[in-house]
Structures are given as structure tokens and as C-alpha cells.
Length: 398
Image (tube, rainbow, N blue to C red; front, side, top):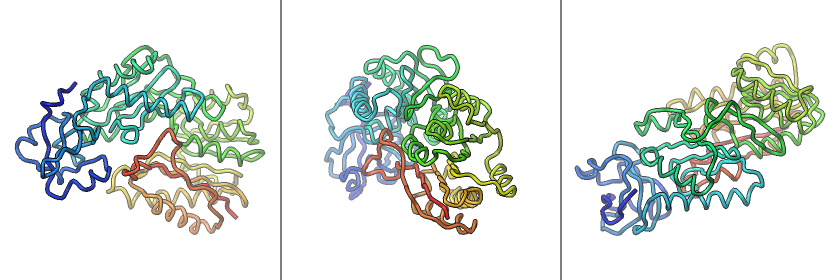
């Protein structure tokens, strides 16, 4: 993949090495001496990072055309970046997940936090999905796949290269099978229950492992109650609540295939009698139920990202506020409300403020029981707090 002595060199402007020296994994384009030789380096190349005085800072992937110009791979300037390097990082990520979980269903690689910038790998038993969100990772997918074969030898590999991050790198979007065969939805396990996901055609990589712990917490409060789960997707919250003893659950989503997966999970877990799939727009259904005066003991509102870029922040914040107002109106006194956000552009204080405003708009008060992020298979790089994208606030309302 690379020959370290011949790697191109990138120098930083004077004084712009300090953040990298303190452990941050990114170099921004305005920190780089972007002279003609630097601009000529092919996107996706591995480069040697030097400060203005020539001191080596490590090896990084490089793209002269993006805001994040360099992503640090290793602080060792003499390392060789090849499939063995990638396999070593994947093996370390696997060792951590094996300590966390006794079943092979989790996010296996979470980008920078696992030392593999811009690479996402989710595991569904002997099927894995791969998302390469940088030119480097895209160019070296053969090495990534070879490394996965070396470490896991999965029966099937699906490339889910359809994220918005790829557009920022100038990469096309695609979803395709890279190895093996997948025939319809695949089975996975979470919190002791069985679910079904479509990693080839569903949203993101097919399942959202990040909410695992939050699902378990809410389900622990759902026994004997009426539960409604908006933006339910494959029924993660709804079915977990039913398995935990909820009297009834309703999964609301616009996607019929997702609702079919949720119904299949309810059947597989023996709770089909307590489960209802309702195809509807979440906001329309929230409004209809509120106007009808219906209430539920547990209300879950975990939408897709309302804020996909910073320019969407104001509109997205209003959407979170409205969602909370409507959800609070149908939460029974003493009931539980979960409001979620996976928008990394909305920081936790801003999200909490919109939830609080929504409660005031609904004329409700209560208390926060839990404010959490993703599970430990989605680790956060200690110098990259923006990678802590998920927010799940659980409240009891008066």
C-alpha cells in the first residue's frame, strides 16, 4: 500500500502543530502549507506530517481538496501502512468488542476512536457492513476487505458507501455486495431479543446499535404500560419494550419494509399479540393522537438527523422542539418520554434546551432520569468530542 521512505511530506504552518501535538486526529486545510507540491498530492495518499521546523508528527491520510485535509493514522513516522496495519487495528477493535459483548452483534470499527479514520464496520454475526467515508479508505477498500478476511473471515461483506460524508470527499454513493450472498433481512440479537435488518437496502448500515443501552433502560420502565415508538424503523425500542413486559406497543414509521422487519421481530420474540405496526408520518401521527386526547405510559421519539449540516441548525432545532411538544402532549402523567437526536451538529446543551422548550410549550414539567449517548461499541475519541453525536434524554413527566 505504501513505501514509507518515499511518502510525500506535508508541513504545517508555524504554530499550527500544537493541537495535533496534544492528540487531535485532524489537520484542517488552513493549517497546512498548501503549496504547489502539496496541492499536487493525489487525494487519498498517505503523507508524513511535519511541523514548520521539520519535526515528524506522524503519518496521515491526505486530501488537498477538503476542509479536513489530513487524518492521523499513527504517531509513528516509520510505520508501514498496509493491510497488516489495518488488520492490527481491526483486531484491537475486535478484542474490545469481545470484552463488551458475548454475542457477535455490534459496531466493530468506529472510525477515529478505533484508529481507522473515516471507516465504519458493523457486525451481524458472519455478515459485516463497511462504510468508507474518505478517499483513502475508499481507494484502499481491497486492503480493508483483506484485513477483515484475515481477522474475521466473514461469510458476506456489504459496502454501504452511501453516506453524505462521501460527497464532501468527492466520492460517489453506492451500496453493493462485496463478498458472499445475503438473501433478504438478516437476524441479529440485542438485549436478549431477536431483530431483523436489511443491511443492503435499509437506512445507514441496516441497524442502529448505538441505542442499545438506551433501549434497555426505557424497556425496564415499560412493564405493564402502553408504549408508542415514533420513527421506529426496525422496531428496536418497540420490540424491546414488548419483550420486557409492556402491555402493548405501537411502532410508527413511514417505511413499510422497516415495519415488516419490526413485526417479524415481534413474532420471533413471541410478543406479536402486544405489537402493532402503524405506517404513518411521525409528526402527523403525533398531532392526530394529541388532538384525540390519547396518552401512553412510554413515548419514544428517536428521529433521523434533523440537522445534517450547520446551515440546518435553526430549522432542525425547531423540529426537535416541536417533536418534544407533541410527544409530551401524549405522555400520561407520571409517564416516560425519550427524546433522541443523532445530529452531530447539535451539541448536548442545545438539544437539552430544545427539549426543555418543547416541554414548556406543551405545558408539562418533569425530571430528567437519564441523558446518555451511544453504547460502548461506539467509543469517542478523547480529542474529538464532536464524534459523540448521539443524545438520548429520558424524562418522567408530571
